[in-house]
Length: 113
Length: 113
Image (cartoon, rainbow over all chains, first blue to last red):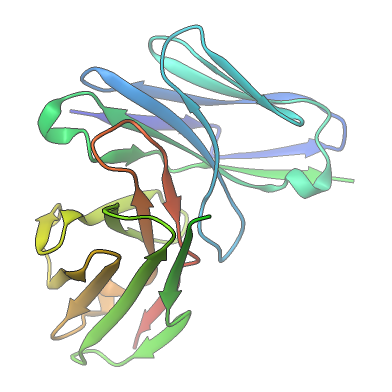
């Protein structure tokens, strides 16, 4: 069964304290792995798409990496405005399933000034 | 550029009342459309998706239904709401037949009392 697990559930950092969020997955033929940011009461905002193991994407203080079993979202020198819930999703490569995304429960990040 | 709209933003409905949530997308044609529900502190649960007008796939058996009367319009309905239908409902669109990211609307907060 396709599954996505994110850890930790919550993470509290001091401003400037770098860390990583984990997304482990089991899926039949990964077609794509996606990272989103969600602020309270709002819809998720797209951040990155990763397609194959070894791929990396960067955006400001965020860097996403992908292996065959997991993805990491590295946050370098975070600021309070980076506080949000970060969601990971995978898309199956199976033909009858490729329209569906499987989401993890998210990691709630709180960056204190 | 593409824009996705949802309304209403918030809704409070009594148990047993009907429901209609609407989602429209601008700036693209023939998108895949999705309805998700997000319970407090949990991941996104896919409810329905549509690859074209009149084509609806249901992921979770429940008292909800979806319809796509026009290419860029997606409607979520219920004849009789249950308390368990409370949650944050998100509409999303994605490009068809490929591994592209989904883009989310602002969401509707539904409280069933």
